[in-house]
Length: 395
Image (cartoon, rainbow, N blue to C red; front, side, top):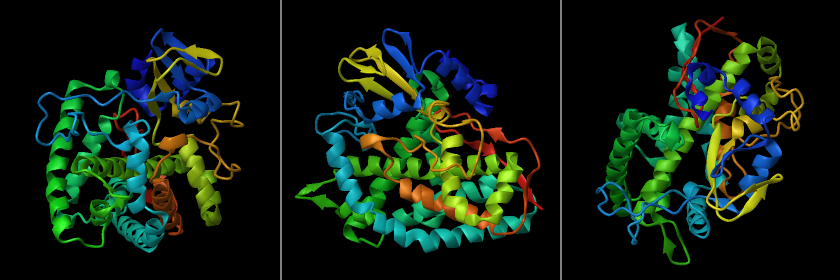
């Protein structure tokens, strides 16, 4: 059943498939060791429940020099793939550098970049909005935050795309995509290992220097933890925001009345971004492991069972959302799970929202109407849902 996620039809519009899964039950048992959760209430409860988490990191007998391992030989993971107390410690350290105040200071620069990119797109006539705005905005922002030289940002984007593909569940990843992700990860680690060494001896005013220096009661990020945290910030800070801007723009183009309503009242943009996150989430699914015998809803789940949480389905649960397949930028306080729940709630949520709001402020502030010039193509990722291209013109 889940192989349907890979078909071109489902990539273009997964929501009929999700509805079919939901109608079979908001918590669906596929076999003794595998469950699918598609209901909003059930998914939210699971993501907050300490009975669910992740498997222990794999121990590597002969790790590659650019495959960080800890003192026990375990693959170093980002806090996104860890359980407490490892998750608690690592997220607390990263949070000391990745602060709301830092995001607030970025706002003028993000607004400036958004206006520059949109102005350049206007001069070009027909443009691929993904290449013109949705991809470069978050890449430049996270690159500047980390102190990556402008000449290296193309590699940055390539690594991000390859590693983002590896976020799909293993049974949905081809061998070629898995190999490309491993290669990108190793190149990334080698690059940032050298850049981090420079920051240790010559710190500058960037997030990388802050992460190198961060400490808490004598505790510091190890080199491996630093490198994997940077990897998380790249993929989570780039791919997801790119997809939010692309998916949100396509939703507006497919609903001209909503585009016009937002253009006439741009104060609705923050609420519209939340509706975009609900309606066509850039993160469609996540996996969890049952750490003990438990239940979701009224369905018993045994320890070690795998659970696939369909966030895209939960965000259109008709029990939670009135007329869930309708895109409405004025929907009151759109509830969604696009940024997660519980201890794994997205640390970069304020930055993603800032970038999306700035991009749509710039697009809608032109006074021009966007028009699709060809049918957009969807990327092959499943977990991270986004467009490969989005060709438009400004009328």
